[in-house]
Image 1 (tube, rainbow, N blue to C red):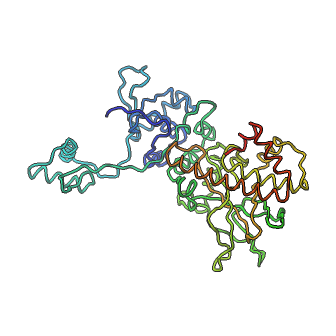
Image 2 (cartoon, one colour):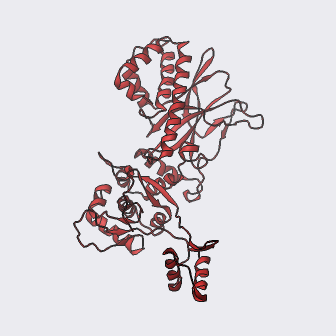
Image 3 (spheres, rainbow, N blue to C red):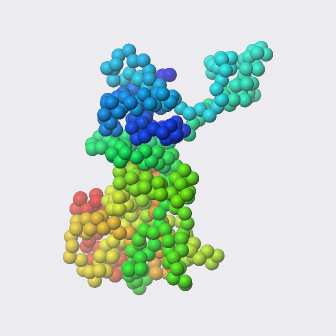
Length: 430
């Protein structure tokens, strides 16, 4: 296999092979070692030039722990140790990480025919043709109008950003998850990377995992034409007619997480604490459908991003989210704030509250959070998604600013001060 330059953005993880780590009863040491070796593979994501030293650097494991993990992985066929002529050669091929293949194994005669077809030859004679038909039933080749052709194998992969394993400064998410000592969060992270769909779902598809927010009874500030709500996290809502609590829907759907999913939420919390995931919260508003007493529209306006319970400053959603917070603070101060913009930004981030500022014609305001990976692969899809997200956040930012000026003239002065100072501009910039 000719060596090719590997993308700087991400590596492909065979999810079937990675799942075997859990099936064989292995732990975080084996999972971290496998990911570290995969990080150092070539473009084919099979041959790794990583060694014990690089695994130690990425994962924080000791030399003895890495060697023990490699031996366990090799004993189950998850990796294959290669002979290295020069052990100190930095780019020497040291390990092979086989990919999962659901096809039946080939016999000796069948392997020879498949190899010949790959080389551009066609089977001749009844014995070769029979072997070709047997290989076809096992899914390796097929007969087309132009002769026998090899079927390209495709395995199910999760694209893991290199930054999940290696960072230029500090500790990587993998390193931080190792400190927890639990395999679940690392396995869940790989699964979520496989499931993420930035273009259509903004992150992980909503039917897989999501949280909910709804308007708090404590804060409901009404203006003449607009309304401000403080949202609190919950997956229940209060029926206004009966006053009883009602559940909205299940928040996750994968069976391996258990009937009630306690292990799943524990793993999510671990990923949240390690800053692997983030919750992007959007408003879901509009008049309920007559046939559905609690109908949802698709999320319409960004309300902020939470990591580990705190507002994130450097996301596109942070600008409109901070604007909604300013409306709340201006209302509290009766239209005249004495705090500096820096103090306001710090309070908003540390408080972690989610505010929604909408038209009063909207019958109800709810929030729906969308889980996404904080470390995302640098692909063209991601660039398009980010561009569209920035445009949406710009529109929301100006909507809140223009609406708030009608009630609070000081809003214009605050925005001007933020824009004139580089720190504030970068803190809530899209």
